[in-house]
Image (cartoon, rainbow, N blue to C red; front, side, top):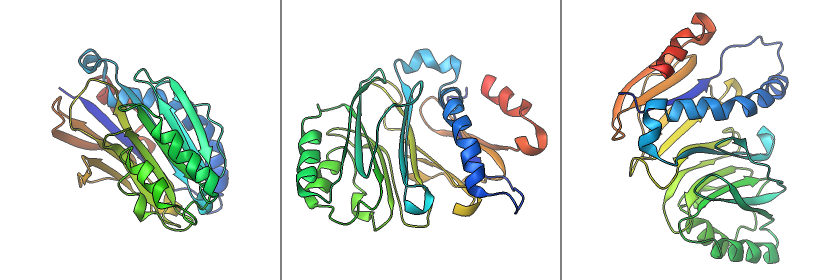
Length: 268
């Protein structure tokens, strides 16, 4: 039986006359409304929800200066109402997906770096933590801030460079559920995973999708390893067994064939 459907939307060809920024302005509000339902259906089909207990989908996105310079946080019902500014925004979630706290720290200022370390130190062990950058946080990034991020599973923070983007979904005192660092010009960082007390142990999923200007690719990884599945235009899906083992993959070209096949796969 299908356990999970992980979708990464590959950018379809558009007219050269179309503005990429204009396309993003048009699609971002729609995606913000659609993603919770799509991701919930994709990650947790109805027949599996009882076995998974109180799990919920979550996502963190971060874009560097070249891609809009923004952090975004999503959990369960949609985008979290978090005020962000230049620096690292740290968000904590309860096991039921409710927002516990959120603060932004401009870590090139020593007092703000100290405040971020103190904020993370006071997060209870096991709580879900989401971290995303905005602006060039590389300069002035102190070792004590990196160590605080690592305490939430952020083992790749040392890979961040100037004008890059960083996104983390982890647990305080635990490993990262998903983490990504993107260098300048490589497009936004985006990570997603199921969160909750119960579920398939040891299975961490990362889904990456890039538009035409950022490489035009879709990549799905399981426990940090790229599954290496063939991808193409449309919705690229991977099906997992209940134990997290790979079952199958398929590309749904909704631009050419419509949505019926994709909807049938989700409903099956």
